[in-house]
Image (cartoon, rainbow, N blue to C red; front, top):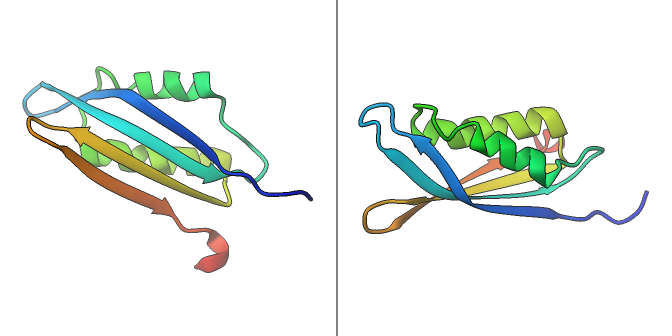
Length: 104
C-alpha cells in the first residue's frame, strides 16, 4: 500500500467578480489533501480557477463550490481548502474541510 502523502497547492492569483457591485474579488486559495487514487494536475487546477475570473458569484459560494467540485472528482482521503480574501484593508480567512466518510 505504501505511505500516505499530502499534496498542497497555493494559488495567489484567484479572482472572481462580485455579482452586486461588478468589482473583482481577489483571494489566495490553498488546497491541501491526501489523495486516494487520483491527483489533480497543477495546470488543470489553475485553468479551473481561471474559469471563475469573469463569473459573477459571491466569494463564499465560490470557495464552497471549489471544495465540492474537487472532492467529487478526486474523492480524497481528506481535503482542506483555505481562502484568504484580499479586501481593502485586510485578508479575510475562510477554511473549509471535507470530513472523510469513514468519520461520519
